[in-house]
Length: 127
Image (cartoon, rainbow, N blue to C red; front, top):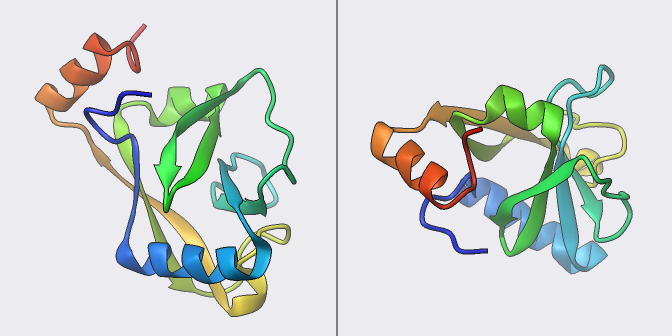
C-alpha cells in the first residue's frame, strides 16, 4: 500500500508498548473497536487472533503491525488521522496490554486540505 499520508500513527510511548507486547506474544494486529463494551479503544491482539471480515479495512501499520478499522468506524473517522497513544489504566478486556496497567487510546486530528486531497487522489479516502 503506497503511503503518502499516514492514516494511523503511533506515539513513541505506544511504539514502546508494542515492542514489549511483541516480545511476549509475537507479531500483533490492531482493530479499532466501535463496540459498546470497550468504547472506541484500539484493540491489540496476537496476529490472527481476531478474524478480520469483509467490512474491515487495513488502515495502515503501527510499529510494523497491521491496524484495521471497520467500514462503519472508518466512515466516522475518515476525515481524521488516528494517533494511537498509551495511558495508564485498564484496556479492553481482550486487548493484550490490559495486564500491564496501560491501555491504548485513540486520539485524532483533522487532515489538512492538502492531506485530504492526497488521500482522495490515492483512492484511500472520499466517496
